[in-house]
Length: 222
Image (tube, rainbow, N blue to C red; front, side):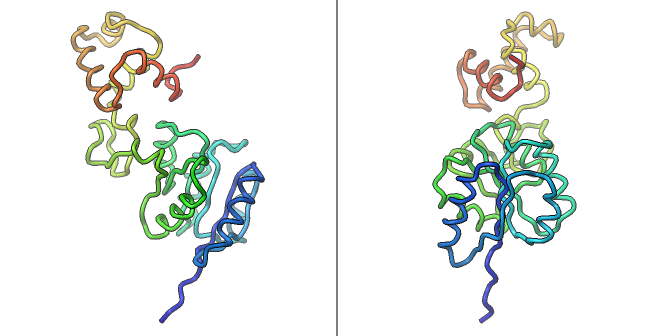
């Protein structure tokens, strides 16, 4: 019987407490090993080349270059590296950006460390890994809006067509149905139909909550 090599895990996060917590938790697992960490994105490719991790856990809010661009660069240049995003914020826009960049998972930092451990195993097995706070927001690509055009899973926000996202943004800006109709050169009834579709896809059934969602997801500058 061939003995499997342990899963090599690396973490990039500027919070020492999280890194040390993961290091201690992974030390309890017989099928994985914590190979190293970094608190910045500087020289990340070189560190990965030296440490040879199978899974890279990376904080989406770490200071420095755009993390999603960093993930995309890693995805394109390093074969067999599974990137999993860690975040203190569960936002649909972040989820879509992570997946589009090549990340194989999105895990909330608030989850039990065991959830992160399970996520590491899942991505190595070829699956996507989403923590319980994230999973309800993610949909199979076959259920996504016609504007998505992707075979990857995506968030509720990603299910909206470009027109629906435009209208959602204007709702977040506090524009009336009449004003929105004038901007998109359609009737107010058409705006109502788009709003109903948006509500159904997002699972939100109140205009005020729609506006809050648009602001929270960064669709509207405040």
